[in-house]
Every structure is written in structure tokens, then in C-alpha cells.
Image (cartoon, rainbow, N blue to C red; front, side, top):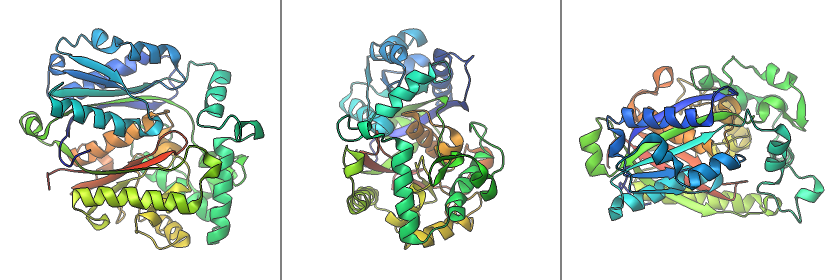
Length: 393
């Protein structure tokens, strides 16, 4: 993605949670029209629509792929529609597609959306879907490999190598919850303590239930355009300043720590170079973690902390909390927000824009000028870092 070639001018989002009475199209109507109104536009100003896949929801996925959304919303100015699937990295790839449309004249103003509704789906179907998604059916799935199991093994190694106690690991979901307490869209908002985390049932040693994420309903939408049009449309447009991406490996059990660290560092370095900024310029790190272990790893990769023990201490001391010197994951990550399939990346993208627009309410970070966010696809096949700012640097 080219520096400063696309801007966010409107955002929309619904609360994440378990809402069986809320129809999936209600989520789509609400988020899309919120985003259009937030941009101060008429729905017929939208010239392009880009949809995220509805993971585990074949009917909704088919409706979106076959172009139902512009018809349902009555978008009379729509010229084209497409669906892009890159798992948890879908939001970044939809931005790339939108930039291409905008800069080639296909569509001047593009609506990007995501909607998930798991609460009305047969649990057995969901279990099967997520038990096999991203897994090697030859070398992983037959041996009982699960996301919780794989992350549990990685967490055990991380704790052993860095002399980390269960209490120290439990401080990470506590840090996430500090932000969720202030977030009206979060699924879990009650105050959390280390003792509470460790008292919940063991899912896969050493991960307790509050160290794992829960599937949820949710949705978000954004309106994007060129920087030139953004200045005419919006008082506080948010500009993409830099991006870096690296492919890691599809087969989870074959990834080494050295490979992951190198890929993450290279992707982050590309984003900072393109933006002409450094980690010290960032006011917020919107780190998409899903499990506690990724927070200290990313803090190390980004050069914020020197080692695992240092990273854990940095978090436990409140540096990433509201009011801390480096706010991180201001939606409380998937552990408190709820996991919406490909939608967690969308939630972070909307939150990034919200913070830079000054619309984050109680979570608002003062004088927020630059935000670094990350996302990863599928079972972590890649890592993408993106930098956004209030001004074109």
C-alpha cells in the first residue's frame, strides 16, 4: 500500500457479544449506515463496496459474494462490489483493494464492511469449522491439534525460557480488561484480577478460560476515499502512512520462533520506513493478540522491551493500561472484545480511526497523532503492520 494514498472518513460498529435475536443483516444495515452518516455522506455517494467473508456462515457469505449488499442498502451510485478473504488480515487486504479502486478511478468513495453472527449457528458446526480451519489435514488435525493446544504449547515454552510465572501471564488479560471496562462495544467488561483469571477452568495447560478468546457476534464498517476528497468530506480524516507485510508459514507446527521474529521485525521495519516514523513516535499500539503470549512477543519485536521478563513487567506495571505511557490494545483485544472471525482486525482498524478522530470517549488517548496496528491471517500465516496518522507526514 502506498504512503498517504487512502484515508478513512467514516466508521460504524455494533457491540460485540452473544445476540441471537439480532439478525446478521441488522448488523450490516446498522454498521454501514453509521459509517456513511459518520462521514457526512449520502448513501448514494458510495461508488464501491468491499465485503469481508462471513467465516462459518455459508448463507451470509454467499449473499455477500453475490452482491446483495448494495441492493439491500439501495446504493444507487455503486459501480462495483467484491469480496476479499485473508482471514484475520482481511481488513488490511480490503484497504489495499480500496486503494486500487480509488487510485485507478473505479470508485472514488468505497464502503468496507464485516459482519459476524455465530450465536444462531449449530455449535457442532462451529466447532468443526474452527477445528479444521488453517490446519494441515495430513500432519496436524489427525493428531488432535487445536488452536488452544498449539498456543498452550508455545506459551509453556515462552514461560519456561523466560522464567515467567502463571501469575505474570495472567496479568496480560487483566491489562486487556482495563480497556474493555471503558468500551461499550466489548463483550466482557467486568473488572478482572490475576486471581480471577487463575481461578477459571483450565482449557489447555497453562491456558485458563480467561486466557482464551470466545466466539461472538459483531460487525464494523468504514468509508474510505482519497486524501484529496477526504479533506473536503471530513474534518478529521485518518491517513494510512505506512504498511509492511511478511508471509510466515501455513503449517503452524512447522514455524520456528526465529522465523516468526524475523518476519515480524521485517514487516514492522517496512511500515516504519514507509511512514518515515519510529516506534517512539507512536501514541498507541493496537496489537491484535487473541492469546496473551503475543502481547509480550510483539513488544519485544517492536523494540519496546528487551526480553520476555521485561515485557511482562512492562505490562503488569500498567504501562499499556489506560493512562499508561504506551497504551496498547485499547479495545481489550479478542480476550475481552470477543472473537468475530475475520472481524477482530476490523475492530482494531475502526478503533485506530476512532482514536485518531478523537471519538473514543472514555478510552480516548490524549493528543493521539500516530497509531501502529497489526493483523495476521488465518492461523497466523502472515503478519501485517500498518501505521495511521491524523496528518500526511
